[in-house]
Image 1 (cartoon, rainbow, N blue to C red):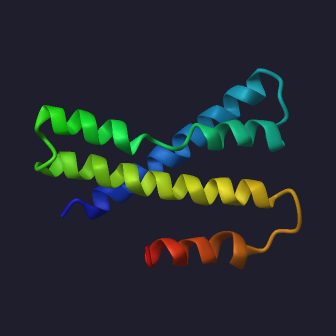
Image 2: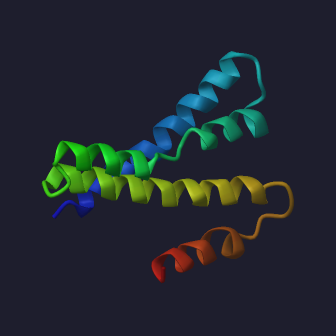
Amino acid sequence: VVGPKACAIAVLGTILPLVTGSILMVIYGYPLFPDSVAVGVALSPTSVGIALRLLGEAGVLQHDFGQAIVTAAFIDDILSLILFNILMSLRGPFDAVATVVLPIIGIIFM
């Protein structure tokens, strides 16, 4: 039942740090690409281990909101890995299949 909520949280948890980090770097005078985007991508991942530990100690992992937080953290990390992959592929010619589609297929079958 937590799937759609967790996905929405994960997308926001990936996009907001990306946008905020990029904007802050531009404000400090760095170019948007590649410096600012790289900082934004670096801020996107969450720590699943810390979330699991804190929620486990609080005894809320079995509740819906605890499951939503953990699910969102996993999805956020997957989205962040895809962003890292895209960022690293921008050094050369962009191949959408190798950069985006194949990692998503690998994640699905994981």
